[in-house]
Every structure is written in C-alpha cells, then in structure tokens.
Length: 596
Image 1 (spheres, rainbow, N blue to C red):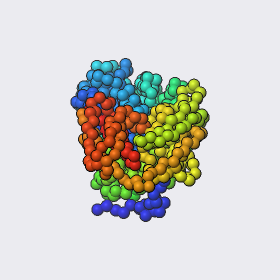
Image 2 (image 1 turned 30 degrees about the horizontal axis):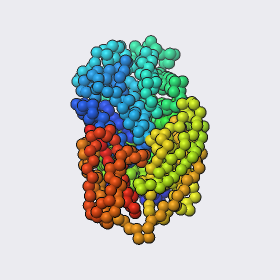
Image 3 (image 1 turned 60 degrees about the horizontal axis):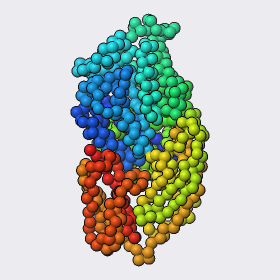
Image 4 (image 1 turned 90 degrees about the vertical axis):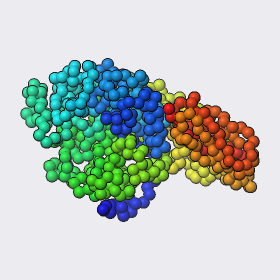
C-alpha cells in the first residue's frame, strides 16, 4: 500500500510549470555489465550501432539534450587505446577490437541530433568481478599489479599512489585530446563503498606517500582531491571548452555528524566512507557541475528528496547543479512512494522551483525508454515538450557570437522554408558557431526570446536552412528570427525578422491525413500510409530532422481514398527521418526510424 506524497498538494508543485529556456536534460548510458548499451556482448558491430542510434532517437524525441555515456568502467576502453584494453562489453572478450571505433561513432551520432556528449569514466575501479574475470594481457592487473588493491570480489586502483593518479589523468586526457567530447564525467566511485568484513589495505602507501598527513581519512580525501584538481587543470589547459562534472553520492555528510553544514539525513556519508569531499570540489571551482545521485523519494525518512535538493542548491557555490534522478526506482516496492506515478513528476517540479537547479540526469537509459509508470510520456508531453538550450558556463566563456543575417522565409508545399547567412565569428574554438535557434511567433505575439515556448527548433548542426513542417493553414502570420549558439551555448542577438502570411481557401477543410509509418523502426522497407478525402495533387517527400529535403517520393494527382507508399530504406543510414505529405490545403509530417 503506497502513501500519499507529502508534496502532491503543494500548489507550487502541482501547477504545471512552464519549461525553462535553459535546462540540462541528460541520461546516463551505462555500459558496464551491458546495462544499457550494447544490450549484449555478442552483437555484431552493425547491431551495436543500430541499437545506439535507436537509443539516441528515443531520447531526442523525449526532449533530452545530452547523453552521459560510460566509456571506461574498469580500466578498459570503448575506444582504441594504447593505455588500456578494449572492454569486454563489446565482444565478450577483453582486448578484442569490435571492428570500429564506438566512441567516435557515438559522438558523431550525438552531434547529428544536437545532443551534448559527456564521456563518463570510473577513475579507480580496475576489476568488477575478480572471480570470473578474463583479463587481457595489457590490463593493469597484469602490467601494474602493485597498483591494485583487493576489496571483496573487486579490485581497485590505489588512489594514494602518485603513479595511479598520473595514469588516470593520462587516460582521460588521451580521450579529451583525440575526441570531440563536450565534457568529462566521473561517477560516484572513489574509495570503495564499505562492505562488512572488508578492509582497503593501503598501509604501505600511507607510510610512503603520507605527505605529512597523520590522519588517514584526511589523507585519503586529499588523494581524491589531487586527482580531481589535476583533471580540472589539465582539461582547462588543453581544451577550455570541455567541461568537467562529477556525480557524487547523494549525501555529503549528515547534520548529526557535521553541524551545521550537513544535511538533515541519516544515511551513508560520502565524505567519511568513500572519502569524497564533493562540496569542496564545487567550492574550489574544480568542477563545472555536480550531479548528486538523489535516488530517494519525496517522503523517504532517512534521506528525503525534498530535503536534499535544497541542501545541494545551497552548496553548489555557483557551479551547475544537475539532479541525478533515480528513474530505475520507479514502480519498485522497496519504497512504496515509488509506486505512485506522481513521484518523479513531483521531483521534477520541485527541481524547477529551486533556482540553483540547472537540470537533471536520469539513471539510466533503459528505465527511461522502458517508460516506467509513463515517465517517458511525461517528459514528452509535459516537462520537455519544448526544446531547451543548455545552461551557460560564464566562468569558461561569456562572449556571444554575432547575429545571423539575411533571414528569408518562403512558403513551399511542404511548409515554411527558412534560409539565412552564417555570422562571421572569431576564429577561436570557443567562438565557433555550432547551432542555430529557430524562434517562431504567430500573428500579434510580441517577439520574446526568453520564453521556451517560442522555440520552434534548435538545429543539430551549423546548417543555414530549416523547413518548418508544423505550420497551420488558417490565415496565420508567422514571424521568425534566428540566433546562433557557440560551443558553450552563448546565444547571439537575433537576426532580422522574416514574416509571411499563410492563408487557406475559405472552403478548405481537412482533405488529407497521415497514419503512422509501419514497420517503425524499419530495416528494409517501410510503408507510408495516408488518406485523401478528395482527388488532387499530392507531394510526398523524405527529409532529415532539420527538415532538409532528401528525396521526393511522389509528385502526382491521386484519387480520393487510402494510399500507401512503399519506401526502400536499405540505402539510408540508420537514424530518424521525417516524411511529409502536402496537398493544396493540407501539410503534415510523420517520423520514421531506420535501423540495421
């Protein structure tokens, strides 16, 4: 039997809030143990790629704007590396190449959809399952066994060893330099979580590398601090646009232990149990964001969500705060509050009433796409129904690019075609224009670029064309303006406005309709069904996600009645496409996902 959520009747939370213009909307894609991707370690390369494309398409349709993908879970790699072996999650055998570069592929696919890519590293875990591990010859357990410490059935790198810290920084910077990632991300594993009867034996390391510390707990926290600061400094020196974020355990310290700084909670304390002083990392400005894992419910006695969100808000020190949302807990019985379908929506509403909260990251991908208690539907229809720009990072760069120019709008049979000129931005990598924001206003609406509801789209790339397929045909005047975004999402001033009047015949009525494509996703062929209430000219076309035409499919005069177009998709790259139907008095679009 569940209980009524204590915040469900709070008017500030129950009221449907307008989505903010800037918000981080991320999801963790866990690769360890094949949790999220790839689904099995026996998939062929093409199957792996198709799965990832489908995963991204789902999250893009849900309004997300970032993916946090685990690329190094246990001193292994989802990319070719001279420092560590290939991960076994790709082929079932550690050290065996999958036949392509998964990281390069994933980044390219994220870019095609306008999603930020955060490369997720576990810094210290070396072996997850020592009893059953089949390690490659070049794994650190074989090449540097003195760096590892046993703890239960796992093996960890010793954070107190300078050579360990140097190796971890080298691994991270190898990825940061070779790949176009938007951020480096750490999870919550530092020193291992306590296990009954287990001791992390770093006696010899403490004797040799104490650095003047006499208290081992303080020394261990300093070891972790040294790594965090080294990664932060290295990234800023090499690629100042690459952000650094950490997702700590949700409790720093309980107030009963650390008065008055701790939270009003009674749970495991990351400060003293895994030696992670996450509050300090934000206070010192070493990280660009924290994403505390607040996987408890509103009303959970020992660690109440409604207590921890404001605590982290007060202790983020001006850095971004993204809440780690426990989507995997939805509809589980260990805490009855999670059986209530309002639990996660209420958490998201609470986030939006807390000024310092800049967004969310959901754990994990499978839980969101599984639509547990309709969470994915809730994101699509409510919370993320309008696009959102990513939060600004003014401590990195606060200079916006110049405005686009030459915006022109023209009416076509498919919709309103927009074209504009790319602004001439400075040559620096921070200033390069990366995307454009399309704003659309109707009739007498005052242009207001602060409101997310007026954002028609954010282009995934720096294209200079966009086809708006979602126009009405009932005497509406549309006014468009375009802005440019740079690498860190600074937004330019608006372009010149472009307006046009879309009119309909007085006798116009819905003369056509689309039905969903099937099968969808499609591997070889897809059927595109539509209906005409009266005979007339028809244009059927295929587009990419920006609305750019890819191929005309039908241009003919057809009789009234149901019709289907059979589309061969074998020559199309995997991804999401739009297909449109245009008649003199109807325009509509559908989506089609192509997989292999």
